Length: 156
Image 1 (tube, rainbow, N blue to C red):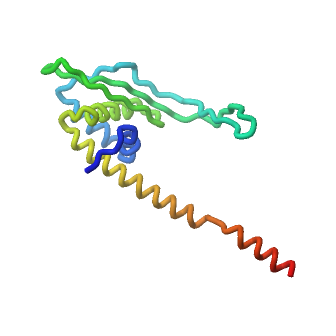
Image 2 (image 1 turned 90 degrees about the vertical axis):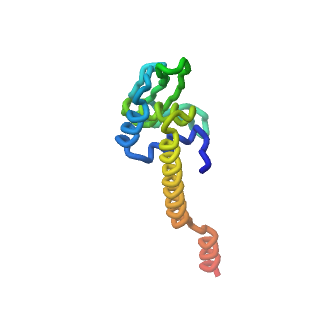
Image 3 (image 1 turned 45 degrees about the vertical axis):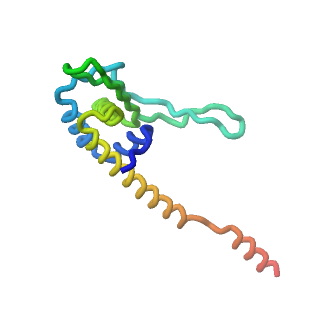
């Protein structure tokens, strides 16, 4: 199994049910102390875009976001391990769970193989969704060259 780049882990993990991820994070942190590097937050973020012609900024709308930055440590070691997550969701609990899974996976802590398996399953699911979307998009393509031929035929 090839482990994808770290920036894809959250995208892959979020294909699974939130409760499954939260439960796994709770199980993997048994015996570990979870400390917040910054307080987890949830709220709304304004999605800013730029006009393509005049290059003026405008706000497209609001999206829910949640973030968490944690540090795992245990009593048997002086070493701590960091993880973080920033998601388009309003659940602080899910953001913390994903940050824990990020730390476990990044530092290959006990249970990292379970997280790797979920990431692999998530990547496969995302690939299937992308293939489905691509096939739907291909069905909507229009060959405009045929329109110009009809116009030429009509003139004759």
